[in-house]
Length: 150
Image 1 (cartoon, one colour):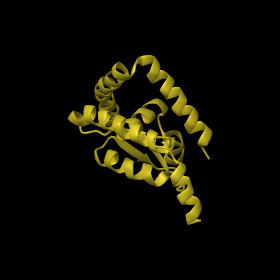
Image 2 (cartoon, one colour):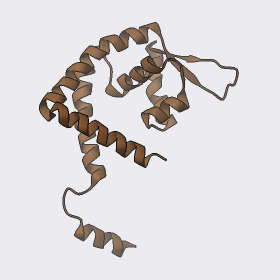
Image 3 (cartoon, one colour):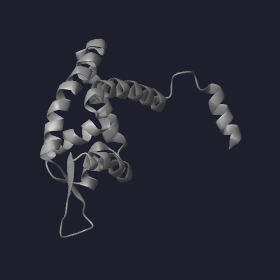
Image 4 (cartoon, rainbow, N blue to C red):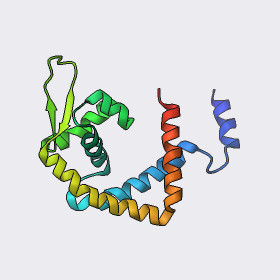
């Protein structure tokens, strides 16, 4: 086994790992959006949750995790500070196995405010990378996410 890993490493040219390239780009983009959202004490991952809740209304946490391509445990960790901040509310259902979440009025207001800050980051990236390139990149990444989805 070690021999095959060594032979792969020996023939692996610099910069061909798709996963590394996507993760590096994601870290850089996340930093741009997080920096833009800093003044309102929100991270881009939280913004994404608010965005999906704004567009979908109340939703099962498992369904939200699927939409965000996140495992449920990670999503639950991301929801906690939003709940503590009064931005989201958990809904009780008859079937206690189903956990639902929705935006609160404060969450809707926070989202509206955040949209302006997010827009600045979006404009910054698209100005630097090019609007057409950014559109193409989103399509490609959505295709990758859809193709590899289990």
